[in-house]
Amino acid sequence: MRKYLCIFVVISNGLLQISKALEVKENSKHIAIVDAENTILLYHKEEIYPPKGSDPAYKRSAFIHPLKTPKGASLTSIHPADHIHHMGLWHAWVKTSVKGKAIDFWNLKKVQGTVRYSETLSIDNGKTQKGFTVIQHHIAFDSEGNQEEIIKENFSIKVSKVKDMYFIDYISNQKNITNADFNLPAYRYGGPIAYRGPEHWKSNNSRLLTSDGKSRKDGHATRANWCAFYGPTKYGQATLAILSHPKNHDSPQRMRIWSNESHDGAIFFNFVPAQEKSWKIEAKKSTEFKYRIILTDSTLTSSKINEHWNKYSE
Image (cartoon, one colour):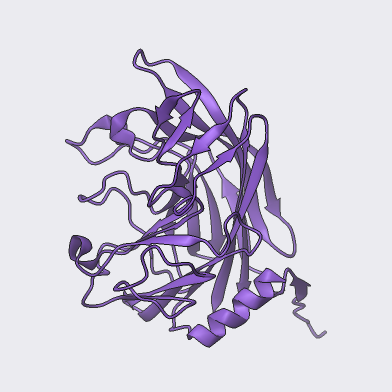
C-alpha cells in the first residue's frame, strides 16, 4: 500500500501559505507560536521584572520576546542596560494627555502608565494562519497609586510560513474608553510598534535600510513604507523587515531611528504616527494599526521587500 503526504497550499492576504508545522500554545505565563522545535515568538501575559538591582517599576507584560528566524536565531532583546524599558517587539504611547493630565505609558520609571495584558480572546490554529487575539489595557497611574484604564486594545498576531520566511501580521485596534479625547502631541517617538534588536548587533556588524534608501545616518524622522534590519547570527546573515500598511494613520509614517553613534549603534526602531503633527483618538472612538514583519535567515534585497509590501498593501 502506498502512502501519500498531502500538503494544503492556500492563498490568503497576498501570501502563499504552507501552515503544516505551525502551532499556537498557551499557558498561564505566555502564548507561544512554534514551528516544530523552533519557538517563533513568545507573547508575555505575565509581567516580567527587570534584572536584579533595577527599579521594579520597569516590570511589564504585553510584549514579544524572543522573536526568531526559521533557523532559530533570536532577533530581539529586552531590558538592555541603556534603556531598561525596551522590550523586544512592543508598543506604547509616550507623550499623551487626557483631561489635561500628562501620561507616559512608555517610560515606565516615571510610574505614570503602562500597557498590560488582560485576557485572551481567541487562539487560532486554523489551516491558513496561526495566531491569537488578546485584550491589552493602557493604564494610567496617579500619585496615590490609583489606576485608570485609558485605552482598551484588541491586539492580534497572525503567523504564516512561506518557504524559508516567516510573515507576522501585527494588528493593534485601540479604543479610547474615556469620556475625553486622548491627545497625542507631536513627539519624536512612541506609538503602535517598536523594535529593539539583539544586543550583539552594533554599528560595525549590522545595518538598516528604509524603502526610500535611507540608513542609520539619515533615516530618522523620514517617512517610509518599510524598514529592514540586517545583522549576523550563528547561521549567517539575517533580515527582519517591518512593513507599514498604507491605511495606517499618517501613512507613510515617520520613523524614530537611532544613528550609528547612539549607544554603539544598537538597533532601535519605531514607526511614529504623531511625530510631525499632533493627533488624537476621540472619546469612545477606535483606531487600528497594521504592520507585517518578515523574518528570514538570508539577506532580503530592497526590490524583494518592495514586492512583499506591494502584495501587503493591496
